[in-house]
Amino acid sequence: MLKTERRCAKVKARIKFRKYGVMRFIGHLDVMRYFQKAMRRAGIPIAFTGGYSPHMIMSFAQPLGVGVTSDGEYLDIELKEDIDPARAVRQLNDVMAEGMEVVGFNRIPDDKKSSGMTIVAAASYRVTLLVSARSANVTRTFPDSWEAKIEEFLNQKSIVVLKKTKRSEAEVDIKPMIYQMRMEDEGIYLFLAAGSEQNLKPDLVMRAFTEFIKEDPGRVPFHYHRIDMYARTPKGTEASGRFISLGKL
Image (cartoon, rainbow, N blue to C red; front, side, top):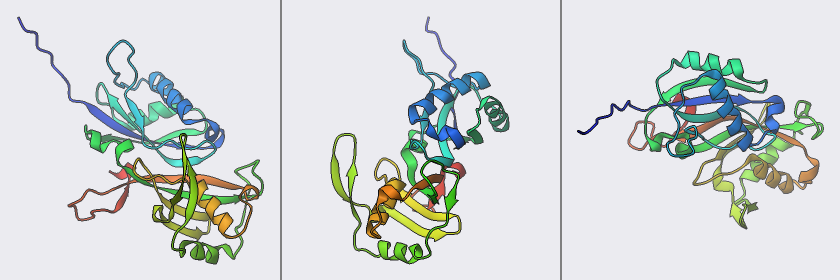
């Protein structure tokens, strides 16, 4: 006699969280382990893979560099059963250490094409100028001349840099990957390509800029703060091709 199993529909959720303070010094692998422990302690009904070595089904949209703070980090998870979003946020924050805070928990479609890792296409950053590289909290104002120099920097036909990866290094024109760069009251705002197709880190942009204005990059300490991450709206929609925060999808 054949046995039939009743399978529940998958429930997927996207968690938005902040990373700040001393927690900015822990790397991506440690963040993964941190959230695995937090899920258990908070009693979140997260799903596991099958097989002999099951692990939690979770994926991060884009790893954050060590030393970088953020208000817009995203983690996608699969749940064994549904849970009230407000309750999930409360239970997770009850077990979070200072420097990590969950700010959103939203259900997302059960579709690989909807995962944060797949759809992320851009990221925004705020760059501040530090008094010393020893502290990310003590900042100083940017020189007045930098606003005009940023415009000159962006008006170049190309911005070629040496981009290094784990396996190789090559000269790359990063200008097409700089969507926006401007001076604001709180610092320099950067809106850059991110994701699997094109990925530009803010420190590479600022290194190219400081070299352009004849400054020694090693003597100009910056702090980088990721504001949010974005996906492009689907083709065929009214807002086709525009960027939208992963938290608003």
